[in-house]
Length: 249
Ligand code: SAM
Image (cartoon, rainbow, N blue to C red; front, top):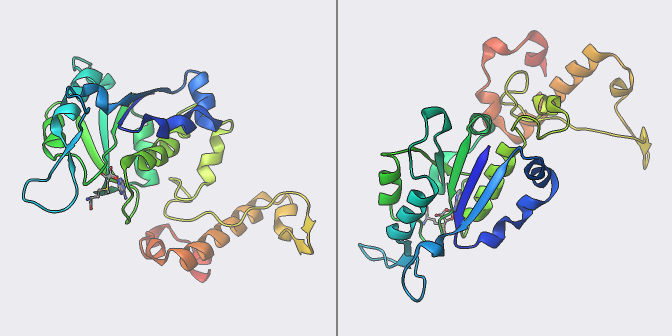
C-alpha cells in the first residue's frame, strides 16, 4: 500500500517510523511519503491560509497550494485498480469505524490531506471529487487543532490490517468491532501469566483448555462490557444473530 500525507507539520509523522508500522515500512509492505504543503506556495512567507469569506474568526486554508499538491502527488492516468483515494479528516466527516479501516486496508493508494485552522477551502474537496474518490472522515465528536493526529489514528488502524503487517493475522478476528463474531461488540478482559497476581486469580475457565467454554465465556464478557460501556452498540445488534445464551447475558 502507498500512503501520501500532506501537512504543514510533516514532523508530526515521525512515529510512523517506529513500532509495527515502522517495521511494515522497512519490510516494504507500506510505503509512506510525507509532504510539506508549503512547498506548493509561491510567496515569501509561504502562506497557506487566508481570512474566511463571510467573515468570522479564524483562518481558512487556501485552495491554491492544495490544488497544486494533489496535482503533483496524483497527476492521474492510473488504472482504476491503482487509483488513489483521498481521505480528508474533518469533524464534519463520516465517523471513522473499524469497518471503514477494513475497507481502506484493501486500497492500493491513500492520500491524506491534513487541515489546520478552520479547515480547507471547500472547493478543494469538490474539485478533487471530479478525478478521484474522496472521503471526509471524522475520528470522533470533538475538535482537534489539526488533521495530523487524526491521520495518525487512521493510518495506524488501517496499516495493521494490511496483509502481512501483523505477526499473527488471526489476532484481528478477536478485536473489538471485528467483522464476524465480534461485530458491534467490545472485546472483554484479557489476562496473562502469572495465574494469581496480588491475590487476584485469572478466571478459571481460561485455564481449562476447553475451547468451546472459553469462546462462550469471551462472548459473555464482550456482551457485558458492551452493554456497560456502549449501550448504543447493544441496541444495534441484529436480534437474528443472538442465541438464547446471548439474550440471558
Ligand atoms: N472549524 C472546524 C469545524 O468546526 O468543523 C474545525 C477545524 S479544526 C480546528 C482543524 C482541523 O483539524 C480540521 O480541518 C481537521 O483536519 C482536523 N480535525 C479536527 N477535529 C477532527 C476530528 N474529530 N476528526 C478528524 N479531523 C479533525
